[in-house]
Image (tube, rainbow, N blue to C red; front, side):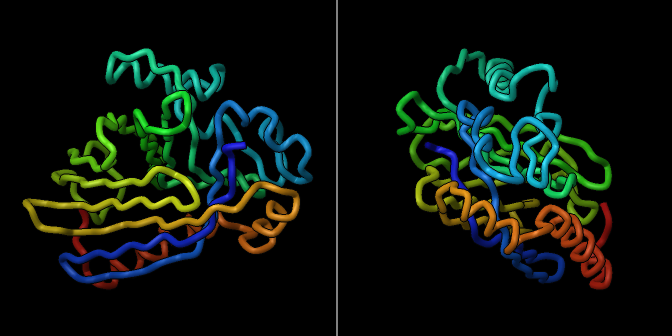
Length: 239
């Protein structure tokens, strides 16, 4: 089984125009899209098909709900890079918990057929309160998994659009790391990082994360607005 639970920490460190730092403990689900349809069938309170306490809802992610998510991501790769990608895809994301989801960012790792090398990474970003979604499709043409790109999608009213990103990833294994940096006119504005550690999917571990992180997606939304309020108190300009 490729699918797993990952637990760890997300950190944001804003450097300009005033420093602001915070971190939160989170867990995320790492889902092999080929395993997903039947992944939770034998686990109480979890589902990939119907409403449940913990529920993967196809509508929360890229593409038409009438198509499989795997097909939608393959079509997206074809659109951006003109390749008929046919390898396995794994997704790092939040599910719906207690009927609610907030996914600031999800990551699709698109592998070769042996799960040895990553061919593409699709970064799916959702903003709030606008409820918009945008996908960056990154061609992983070397083992470094480091990407320089232009900002194309509005995320925060405290961040302008004329920015550049540097994103760096590892190959998911016992640990997942993501480093995302924002620059404006070569000035380093923000570093966001995710560091997560793997746990196997089992009845015990799935129950424990629901108990330990009972409203994780609501916590994510609350954290977004709470930190926005703190930035307002620091007189960070709107964009």
